[in-house]
Amino acid sequence: MPLASAERGKAAIVRVGCASCHTIAGIDWPRGRTGPELDGFAGRGLIAGRLPNRPEILAAYVRDAPALVPGSAMPAMPVSESEARDIVAFLYQTGSR
Amino acid sequence: MLDGWPPPILDPAGPYASGIALLGWVLFAMGGLVVLVVLAALYVALFGKGELQRKLGGTRLIWIAGIAFPLIVLTALLVWGLALTRNLSDPIRGDELRIRVTGEMWWWRVAYLDGRGEPVIHDANELHIPAGQPVVLELDSADVIHSFWVPRLSGKLDMIPGRRNLMRIQADQPGVYGGQCAEYCGGPHALMGLTVAAHAPADFRRLIRARLARERTSAVATNAGQGGRLFASAGCAACHRIAGTSANGLAGPDLTFVGNRRTLGAGILPNNRGTMMGWIGNSQAIKPNNRMPPYTVLSGEELTALAAYLEAQK
Image (tube, rainbow over all chains, first blue to last red; front, side, top):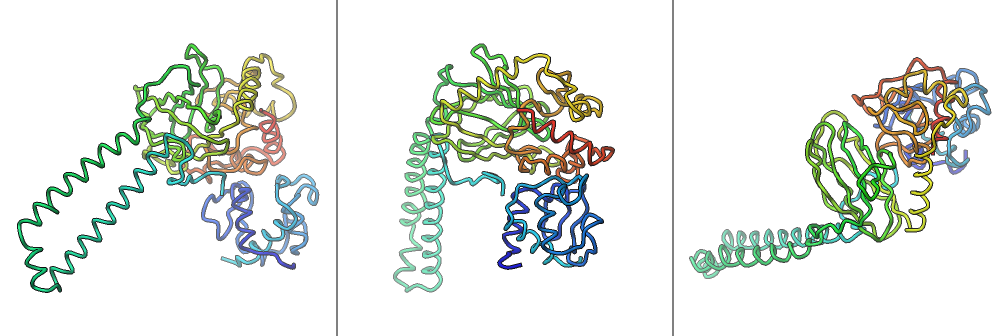
């Protein structure tokens, strides 16, 4: 993924409030519990229990989950394509903890 | 970070905050200067030449630097400071827009008052004001002592149970200004924020007209869709009000205009579909010990429907 930045990804996560539903390593607050924990995403096998955990798929899922997994409770989020790639970079960077 | 939160405290945006900020800077500079002089005197006392040390040890210096100097400087500072912040205690004319803000554990109840002082528009955690004119706030508390503080618009003022404090705020320019409860009020006090949105006067009048019309609409179709039915059946309506529907709970924030709100959870989260679902699903993980229970009984589809229903409340 060219030019993705984990640092910008963290800023985008804070701006749109991903952590309202997800506990995410590296985000101290909030530590939401409505959705699954996202710690150590790099080592995760599947996205939403269905999709292969590949960066471009994860980026698309972050932007518009219901389009990829119909019925997913995760809504489409107000992030641009490049922000979604940044968010993926951040999620992959945090390793397992 | 959220627009304007946490709020910068030394960046005044109106006449009531600017005097306080300037006074703060001057006090800081004077204090710094005195520290430097004292350090210099200390250096002379420890390592200086005999002649200088003798002068430093005389009673004359104590009279001048120890008594006369602070007496004159502090008196001048007091007079200047009171003059500088005089507008904080100017009499209230009575024709200003009045908004009643009630501190609750751990959010802000907001009511816009008509000319007779009756609440006509209900909201929470967000104030809308016209830019360029003073707005009078009636500050109440429903439980414990809170303190209303929007640092860019004025100083702090306590909200005390059984007492109504009046405060003026003014934003010179349209914009969004963050606020924060400034008196420890238990549990999630640190997560008790608010936002003030200042609009150009014409935009403000339009917004108030639209909201007045919305407040007066009776018999809004409650069971429009799954979200509306859930709002009534899942218990939301016992604590939250939506004007014109059967939802008339008063324990929690009014949700008549929640779809327009910039934030959720009292100024702490951005307002979008995802944060709305996260808040409803388990607000305790976001704002521990707040008074809304987690709704882990709802399915993903139900959460989505509820959030969509609330987004439409404008």
